[in-house]
Length: 137
Image 1 (cartoon, rainbow, N blue to C red):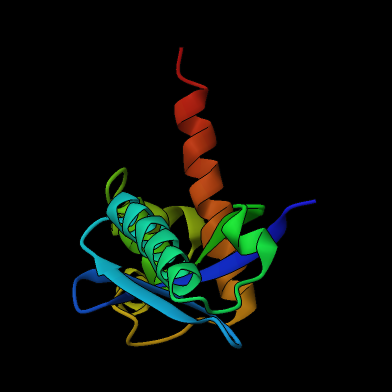
Image 2 (tube, helix red, strand yellow; image 1 turned 180 degrees about the horizontal axis):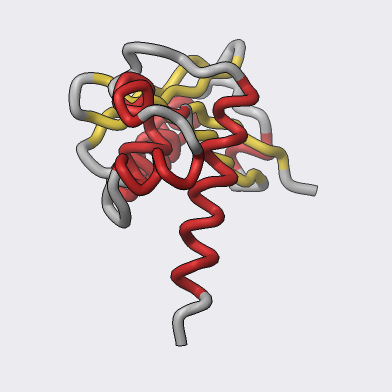
């Protein structure tokens, strides 16, 4: 059974950012202008870090060396909204979620952090927008 590597993705200063660490292994941090670029950079950096540790004779769990893991990227609301901007606007997200557009902009800039219920409204709103696109024939 594959281990899960949970990577938290945030938004800061016009970049996606992520990090992951494990005791006795260290940490991997990355930034990139795009989410796709961030994911690729994280995976490459993690692989390089683990290979370097193994070459130096450091103890690395077999599941990491063997690649017996799945990377799960968890997006903060800011990162989620920045990713959604490629496909829709804050005005549309505001109409669908009922959340004030200015407040959404504060969430997208990470000036404010929404509560879990607000995050759920945003995610449900984005799903609703996606379902509407899928309904087009």
